[in-house]
Length: 293
Ligand code: PDD
Image 1: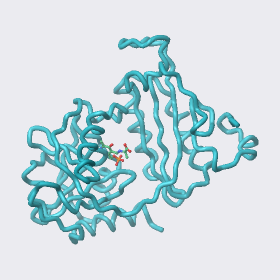
Image 2: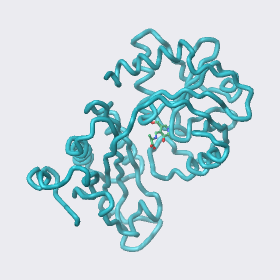
Image 3: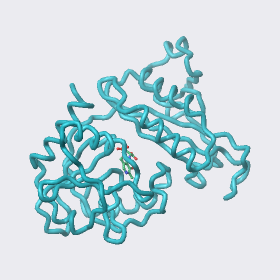
């Protein structure tokens, strides 16, 4: 049976089993598996869409405004005319109605559904929105990673769903029993397949500076500013492959991974300490600020 209700219709919600309701499509709540999408959605034909992954822990949304600002930035950068206030409300509703304590919302905005597939879009299209909420265990993961050439487009600062470069590289790494990749362009580290990169060299912490080649990760930003409050300086600069391979400790950050230490970089003679005191300090600072039980 398909249950549909409009945003804010608490009465109908009360009749629905909370286990079944996890999604919203164009403003209508529904079961994830019951949502029907046109094959002419530009998200489907062109990956002409942007997204956010918004974590919440202990019923607290982490850095909500920053995620919303980045969603707005992504829409503006792609000329997608979206109602961000409405999307913000939907994201919060998904969380509160789900009754899930720890999890995240995936929320996507596409340019809309075309009458016929065409590279050049009409300015009359209506943005198409889709979101779902799911539970997630924010547990520490230790990662094995592979290094790979960054084969992606040149606007990785936009959180677009066009992620084929990431997908191909990460699945090649999976064949080597890796959990993630660290990508480089012209010998400079860019980012992970779905994360940002930090490392320690000579007891100093480094991360690649922001550019159009990397996503301005929210976790990255939160860590840098929280660390600064505790007089832990993180240097944002160009980082070479050589620096990374010789690092004493490496970790990746994302909304779902938190700070995840790297135990091994395959085919490299790295000697990585997953319990490096400076890394542990960063991890505790971040945990105290956002993941306090
Ligand atoms: N990805 N870089 C890339 C390419 C990413 O896909 C992500 C996150 C990050 C980290 O960003 P943040 O700290 O804001 O989560 C960096 C999400 C989690 C995903 O696609 O599932």
